[in-house]
Every structure is written in C-alpha cells, then in structure tokens.
Image (cartoon, rainbow, N blue to C red; front, side, top):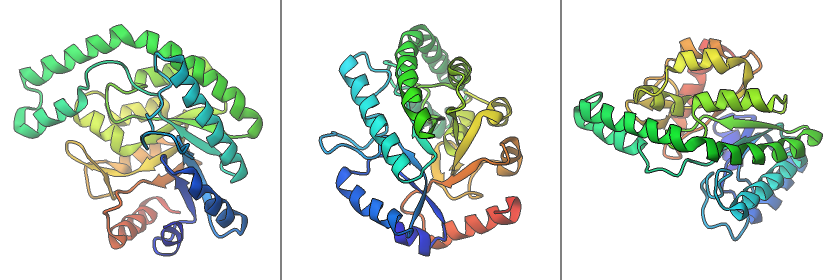
Length: 286
C-alpha cells in the first residue's frame, strides 16, 4: 500500500495513520532505512499495541476518569513519539478524548439531512448540548492538560512536535475555544494546531464555528492540515474541490510553511485523487 501511494499517486511524504499494528512496523522501518519511503507524520495511536481493542484515535482517552486509561494513552503516545524519532518524523497528531455526555453531532446531522436545519427542534437540541458540555468540560480538560504536560516534556528532547487535531464531533475534545486556550496555557513551541478541513467544515455546516474566522484566529499556531473536502452537511473524506470547503479563501490564512497531508477515503479512485492534487498545485503551487 505504501508503495502504491508513492508510485501511483505521486506523494513523496506519507502519514502513518492511527491503528497500524505493531507487526507492520518492522516492514515500515525497513522501507524507511532503505530510503524507499519517507514519512510526514504519525497519527496517534501509532503503532497500536497488540492488545488494543480498537483502532480509533480515541481507543484510549486523555480525558478518561480512569487514571489507568490515561496512563495507557500516555504510554502509547510515548511509543508513537519514539517511533517518530526513529523515522525522522517531525509531527505526531493527537486526539484528546471526549466529554462524558450523550453524543449530539450525529443527531444534529440527521435532523439537518431531514430538512430541519435550524428548526426550533434543532436549535433547542444544540443549545442544550452546549450548556451541558460547558458545565462538565472543565474537569475533563484538567485531566487532558496534565497528560499533555507529560507528553510535551517527553517529545521536546526528541525534537518531535505535537499537533492537536480539530475534531469532527462537538462532544469531542477540544472545541475551538478550548484548543486556543490549551495552546496559550501550554505555551510550548513543541505544541501546535493540526487543522482538518473536513472536520471544521462539518462544524461550520452545523452552526458551531465560522471556518474562516477560526483559521484567522489559530492560523499562526498551525503546524499542518489534513486535506479533505466535505459535501453538506457531513460527508467528509472527499477529494478537494468536490465539496463545499472554500480552499481558495482558507489556505491563505495558514502559514506559508504549513504541511498539507491528503486524507482520503479508501474508496476514492486514483484518478479522482490525482485530479484533486493537480488542481491544488495549479491554485497553490507545490
């Protein structure tokens, strides 16, 4: 698969996604050692321990009440940082967990798809979720901060930077306001923002953020981006320029040294991905 990504799609740098199991790492290391493949980033948790029950980036949560689960999340993150250092990778992408509340995002999406976007039912449900989250979030965030301090301390001597990813779901951590506050409070050059165009577009479509305004706020702290488009209201993982993301407006709000990583649904065709890459180069250069 890695060879196909390089030879058929033409990507010189590849991100290792969350959920890659330990037995695959020997072959990945060999490909790196022979200079066959280079890597841009690792998405936590990578590699995933053999006894892990799931491949989700939230299979262990930094926000968990259980100290044992938080320690497991930190331990696996340390392992990802070690592997990043061995592969000469500069970035490890983190999801931080979620608030212990009933999921709201998919319910709002279903209402929007049913033609009731911004209806009274929609607005009441959204306001109720915001009120609940604001009430219980501070305790979860304190647990996350304590984990992040240990992770930054471990990553800094290895010259690995940690990117906090924009999440798709409102119940996940952090919200945009929380993320800006985390970056300010941690105040580390080894900690920054990892933008996901698709996730943020879903949040704009659902009325939680203004996509462009958010990037104007956080742009200077952005390390990298996951590049994908989104068909309204929430079909992300689409090739760029096939959905509603206004890349021409958004990309100039990011630093000139920002890294762009294509994040595609495996069902997308080679031709569709190649076409999106060519259109990107025509608009934004290499």
